[in-house]
Length: 201
Ligand code: ADP
Image (cartoon, rainbow, N blue to C red; front, top):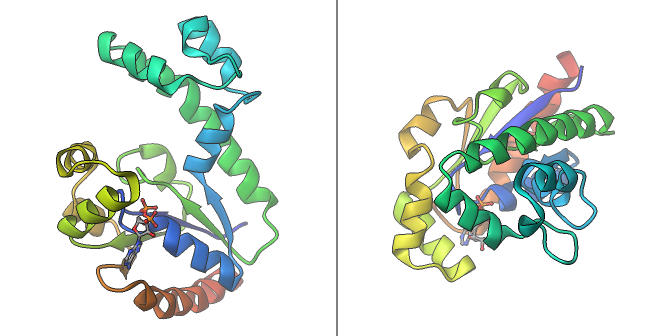
């Protein structure tokens, strides 16, 4: 069986930075956010069921999901978000399973931003690694990466579980409150442990 580590953390905590390092060390990285984008890109397999559920107006001329139009729908129709997730989430999970099973690496790092919030992934991973940093640092990183205001960054964070809840389910904690250079030795140490765990799993 493939040994799968779930990698999670709040927005801006440094999941992508950590995943890139795991990949450098030789892990296979499966990113659920990337899968979601592919499914809703032009020609993506989620487009047809989304069009059937919400109509042509949520599909852009290039055939991709029109995110702005979808956001407007979600804003005015309380059930739209749940219906969209009911289409997308099983497709994302199925594709994540497929990629994990096909991975040619000693183990898989499955990046799931909302791993703690969404029940479906806890049972898919043998171990949970949490990228952690103070919330003020998250806000600052999200602001500089995305040009969002502090209020917008905090609003996104408020829709995610808090730091303590995430740490409560962590098997391994990756401290990314400091410099980027401090990440590498932590990932290297975890990589060695995961290789050992994968070998006996
Ligand atoms: P996530 O994937 O969890 O949203 P990212 O890995 O994309 O987070 O990191 C968020 C932003 O902060 C990115 O612009 C990234 O380059 C930057 N970043 C990540 N870790 C650090 C760090 N230790 N020090 C400074 N900037 C960082």
